[in-house]
Length: 394
Image (cartoon, rainbow, N blue to C red; front, side, top):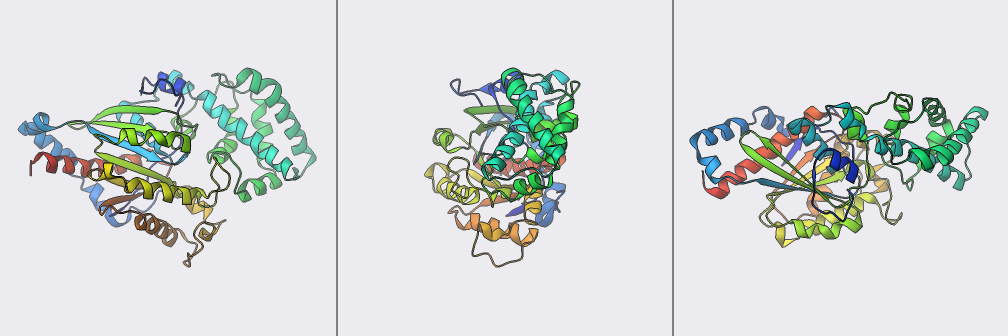
């Protein structure tokens, strides 16, 4: 079953951020397009969960028989699952409404901007590539000096704003033709996919009066370390979501969380089909996601769990297809390098790896909170019906 819906993705997680959001860190030793709706949009438009949930609650049956609906978010690093959790905070817990709460993300956003540009510049030096004009070379020198003498020793990991003049410097460097070519052509450049977003907003971010917006927060990213949980209510139901880090070093924690879960949402970043894995700089990231998904669905612990596949970041995937053929990952692919055929092919590859009969597949993107809301309505619909079947209310 394929639901073509859109959602929003960015990334964040650190112990400081989680403390600020008052989320429960249960591992104290670890820190932490508008797409056509497609085949089953009518499922969301006619979504019955609210009416069904209210009716059951009024009948007194749901409150007597229900339990928490537990959802486990899994996926490789930078797949977008932590942003999904942030969206739930926005939609159901009214998060990120105050400037003080948003300012908690300043260190992460500053790092995404500053560290990404420094990595690109140093990678160009290793490849003996240089910026194209005297002015951008001057900007490069100014940026690296500020990075070494001001940012790293004084501003990094603190909720302090970057001075205004850095915005113009970063914008000038980002617009350099050679840097753009290096950024878009590299397959082993280990910077987060939000680098382009923050470079293009550098003059807004680099300002002493800057406060992160919800969009900035959703776009920000850092490694998820440990295990993070979030609880919220929707209609008459309590949902508990658990997010676990997706890097190889974090996956050993996954199996310990399978027990008592009602659903696993597995996130895949479609946009990484041309990139190499951060952990070894050799393995294709999409191939790694295929392997992990295959291993996951073979687990007997998930025999009675609803598994949903989130093929995520469709917006970035659409843009990538204009520059990189899907054959970079799937050499046997013979279709056109267009969004529709390409995403359907990727979906078929994951389905072929799965031994479970009922896998719900969602095509999701990283730009709109409203669409995440629609996605979760579809998810909650399935889970509520499953719960009703399990407790024999039908």
